[in-house]
Length: 194
Image 1 (cartoon, rainbow, N blue to C red):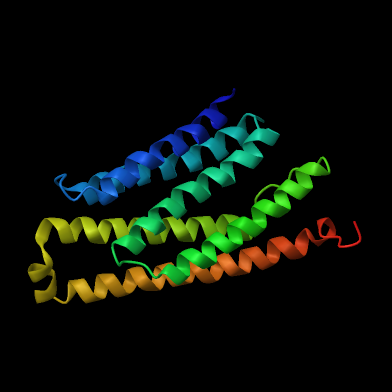
Image 2: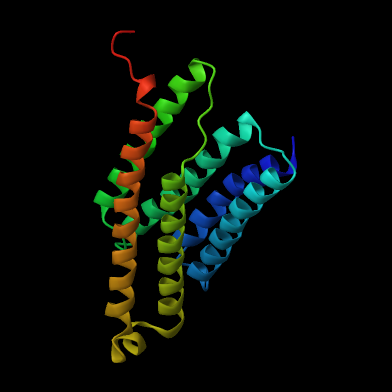
């Protein structure tokens, strides 16, 4: 197994630790630990892609697993945010619906001997989701350190919360666009006659 694929697997292995810290209220600075883990996982995403392209280590396994690792990472964070009341469940439902649809198309393509790599819209969607998640984690990390009263005094809580909500909805819109783009470009795999 090459280095980019190992980094992708590492990204998946970091997810349970991120979820643990996001939900472990009894751990001091638990949001900060979750932020560090999510940031580290996001960095592996950038590095594995760079290494794969630079050293011509692009494999069918990597094309399939890399986007899957991103989905697991982001959706895990979003589900935790719903539990924290920091994200609408509608966002998670839209993201899940898009990912199920895209994964189904990928499986159909694999059945026909083809592997479909992530599109530019898909990459933009992933980046926007990671930015939104990082913002939320930074916001809740600051909140847990300074407290709601200190943030409310300078209107930082409502502002920070609002920015986070806006970023999540922007990423959701990009999720829908990328899903439509993905279906349209791969519509040849959708053949009711078969």
